[in-house]
Image (cartoon, rainbow, N blue to C red; front, side):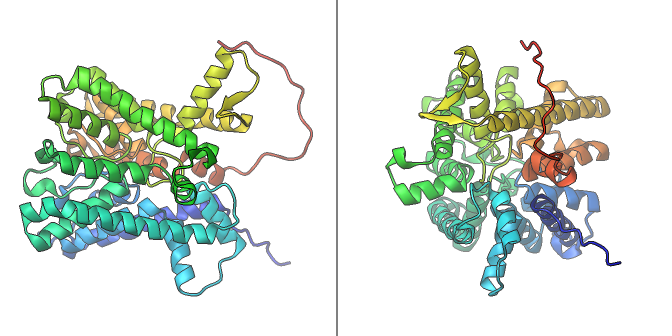
Amino acid sequence: MAKKVRHLNSFQVIIIGFFGLVMAGALLLMLPISSQSRSFTPFTDCLFTAVSATCVTGLVVRDTATYWSVFGKTVILTLIQIGGMGVITIGLAVMRASGKKIGLSQRSTMQSSISAPQVGGIVRFTGFILKTSAIIELTGMLLLAPVFCRDFGLFKGLLYSLWHSVSAFCNAGFDLMGVREKFSSLCSYHDNIYLNIIIMLLIIVGGIGFMVWKDVADHKFSIQKYSLQSKVVMLTSLLLIFLPAAFFFFFEYSGLAIGDRTVSSLFQSVTARTAGFNTQDLSKMDDPGTLMMIILMLVGGSPGSTAGGMKTATLAVLFLAAIAVFSRRSDIQCFKRRLPEESVRTAAAVLFMYLSLFITSGIVISYIEGLPMLTCLFETGSAIGTAGLTLGITTSLSLPSRLILIALMFFGRVGGLTLIYAAVPSSETGKSKLPMEKISVG
């Protein structure tokens, strides 16, 4: 009797794709050609770097600029690009370019990968994503070139411009400023308003979501024609930029000159939501500022974007559900539309998963390393939110703590629900339902 062939579902394909890319990247980074010293790099360091790059996080255990060779940097940038666009997106593009027929299963996987509302038109949408991404990254490179070419010469400056444009757009946070001071990120450019603005715009555009790009391309400035998700994402993103920036302006950077203070406040507000660059020494922040950064890192970017985190839409749905409860409304409303109860359940499950893993991991690392709890929570929040910011403890962590961060980075990029749906089959067995009984809440 022939055995029944078990096909992988879309979520399992996504996980296998990311895992395969991570392992390939780690093995390439182990090669002597990948390091400037031409020596083998320990597998655990390569695995950490490959996961951080593929999951567009930015946490590093080796200074990117000074440790890795040109080949190693090329591997890292490739991982960032594929990880930011999504393994399935790139795979579908390769299939399309090679002339292979793209079946329904591949289209369904792509839909799950980028959180598209429907399968129809998904191939054309993939082409739109790739073309738009290339245009934005090349534009970013040209805009950054005057600064980096001035500081590093024409050829090296162009390479630096391309690197930081891709890294910012993919919300990765990998930088090459270690040539000035190791692990310094963009601190040497804290007073360069022009560069700060370009990097911030690249981060915002990359983290806003592919569906929002499509709405902007199709409807331009006719915002009333945008989908509900685009409206919610744009409004939430604006609030998450300017409200925390005001907090940083008045309470964190009050000692800086007004121009530097304004730019630094905006930059930290933008970069905290998964981008990973920093222009100020984060270890000097007060506890309230550190906690604010942790919250922003956990929220992250928007669905179907290059960013990680719980996502802006998750926060918005939970906020709208709270308003409905406070107003004693049975329906959750937004922009003259009702939201399905499924969205609230999903948002609550995502919040529960992220908080549980973030807090538990922070407690474990604090116990293992003997470090302050808030410092460890900052590190775990950065990993699961794929933010890449650190208070300077990443390189000193022991192997168990690094393995925890690796798992959190993978979880944060692939998505908690993707992992659960891949591992747990649907429990829907029919239309019959159990009796309902209420319990008191709150």
